[in-house]
Length: 281
Image 1 (cartoon, rainbow, N blue to C red):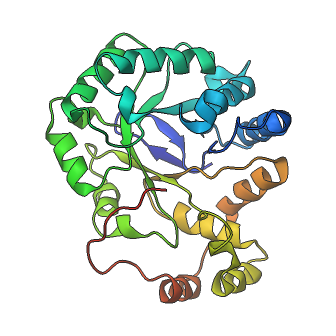
Image 2 (image 1 turned 90 degrees about the horizontal axis):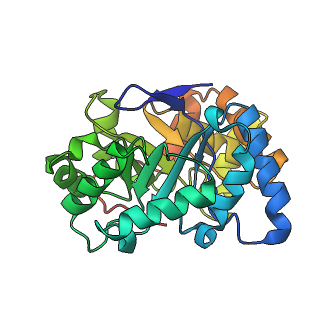
Image 3 (image 1 turned 120 degrees about the vertical axis):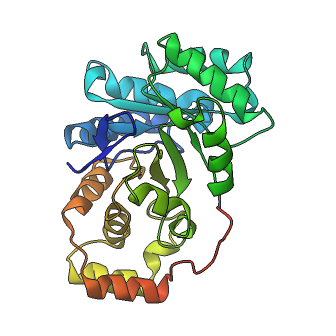
């Protein structure tokens, strides 16, 4: 399994598992748990979730999936912005720990920026880390200016990761955020790419993507995922709710895209030529 090194030296899989929309349907619970467990067996041992997903339901699904194998798994979860104050953040953390049935969160992220001053959230993250409730903290949906402000904050450089949308249709981070990571600075947080195969069917129905997939005897989703995984320092967290989809995601690691593939992709999904605002899905 290809890995990415976090700023503190910890290595995690470049291909993890997302859980958005999990935990919302009791009838799907068994399949969701089985999918995550298969992913762990295939080396996708980083699992991303959030208190927002299913209002805690996804964290409970993750708890079932990692039962008996906690030491194999790197657990990422996220806190709502309205819970990111010095009084509410510790409470939200305890609730997530209880739903996940674990003693410490490996990486705890601020889901997006809210009204709480970032310095207050960072200070509280650091207190949770000192208390052993979390091992690392980070952010999500932070654009370059947000990251500059964060890194200039006291203890802001301890940020381990920034989770952002990144796929063929949304390449905005390539203009400024991504170059920071690929520059291999040990002080720059890693990037986690959510929605790496797009949102909905629009991207996967693209004719060019289908043509490239046919060249590799693969699916459009595998090509889209292989394209994200080509980037050093980027962790992709696609969601898969069934075993077939999990296996499909895992096999994307074996695809080696060619210069022709990249040229075809850039023609249809051109990289940004100027600063564009970071989308949030």
